[in-house]
Length: 558
View 1: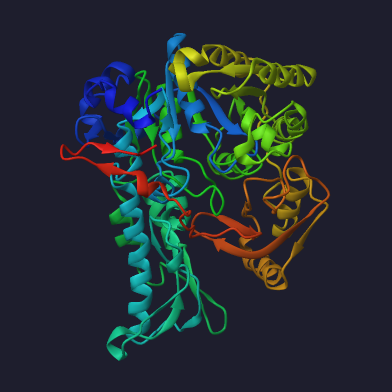
View 2 (view 1 turned 90 degrees about the vertical axis):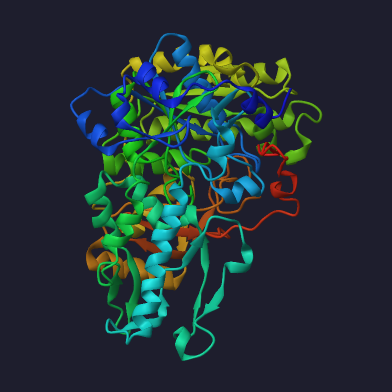
């Protein structure tokens, strides 16, 4: 089997303007081309679609993954292609890849094998420049903060309570904690600072939740950058920053249109971190897709305990979106991992570990059906080494739990390998059984919202808050932010905050070490365990294998 990038480079792509006209009926003037095979869909045209009926929304999520991931994006692409093959008008909605994972451990996020969005190299690298615009808008605000302090600090910012860091779209652990302003009076006042990765920026989350340009600007204005000596919040609006930030983000707010290898339209837009933020593509792209297609297939980051919960409790709460069903991606590798095997030990001996690991699948399915109100279709994303015996064991388990279960081979076969999955998804959506349910009401106090997620979704016995975190939650509750939803940042590899606690652990205590208020994005982040907002590179980063030849042909991306 050729590599992902070799498959993508061998594809014959359709020029984006005639492709958009043929597939979606989009007039040429509604698109802003970025080369031959990428375009932005204008916000004015999206606004003109408002009165059209919505198609079905399909949420692709997964069991708790192994570090390399279980093919959620690949399944999203394969399912979209399969829906097109069986005669449905489909659009795929994905996040944009971050350069950090692309050059780090996981690689890009354009799918894999014969289920990819293309041009793969462009999407996994600079694409249309959205992430650069987000980084610039974020760092402009950081520069305005230090400039304000340098010129007298009229707002009275406490240099010890500035919470707005800088960002760069790369895994660089050396930048997590830095000191700025060294070198004398001309360079400002020395203070502690640090960098997050761009996908962890609140600006990214804001762009992905904003409904239009004016909503974007209003949300930017509400960003809290720090506090005064008497703990009064200072906002981006206090620094008169939101206008310039919105100007930098004007073009980035428009969704990006590309295509799959099978010729299915895909809107690839935004990329919020699935921990520190809600981990879904932009609301603008999803809403536009629903007006253009019979079926929209989208995904949420990490396993269903993180991604699907945030999709419903943050994105759906804020936008009114209502998924018709959830596709729960499972692999033999991940199930064996959660049954006790090492990540590199998949398929080693017997079925014991696989059978034990099925508890993880069962827990996610229960959460989706009982707590989030979504019909579930299990998609077994088949890997080459998976045996018929292993597949049969998973299928029997799902049948016992009355879970529709489908074997999908889209990685090897493209859309043709997921047509059975497409039919199962259609049946689930058209059954009318979906009752998307918020896990907690807006009026529930912040502390109780965190406890609700921990106890219902993670099966924790309780939540333990660091004293400083608990004090902040009470302060924010009293200050009028108690109505916001919560976004829990924890390891994706376990239902607990301990990545080593695999399977379907329960009765643990979720420890919240830190909380952050994202007033512009409109959620409160609870950070648990060892989660970091600036990842590091692994010992052998993917960057070591990426190269370009004298013709400019890139190799090594995956």
